[in-house]
Length: 187
Image 1 (cartoon, rainbow, N blue to C red):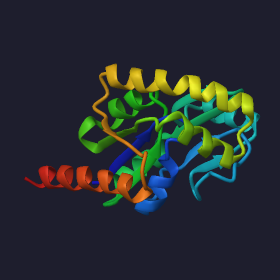
Image 2: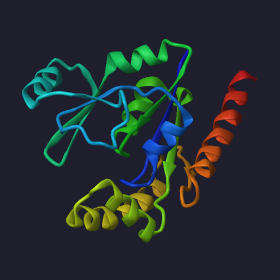
Image 3: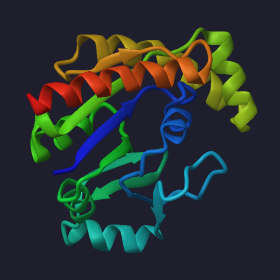
């Protein structure tokens, strides 16, 4: 049976960079927003709003969320396919969606990581390098501390990691936890 590793954290925390460094295949999500240069290959299926609404009406999605006027969701069949494989897959998820995934697949099939926000100057620099607007950067910086506090107080069984140093250090934190978890499951 497959396993899903999820990554949650604010914009610029390093979720996509960590996944890319781990070389894990992604569970495809769907969005109505335009592609971004920072999107990972196979991270999103891009649909027009009408097509997304049609699929939503037919209950094709395990979850649906709206952010910034765009729809986001993950198809149930994509999650099922990953779980019926022998592989480990990755997902980037916002906090409000993770409980839906845990309920759907069971907590023993999901290893949720939360990447704590790096210091403000690092976060600002990352967002500037990605081309975020000044307004977007300021809004996301305000949100970052609130997200970290909410994650800490939530009932989600996150493993908290930092990404303040090198990407290799963050990836090593994930690998260590994954290996321990994998070993426990075989006992």
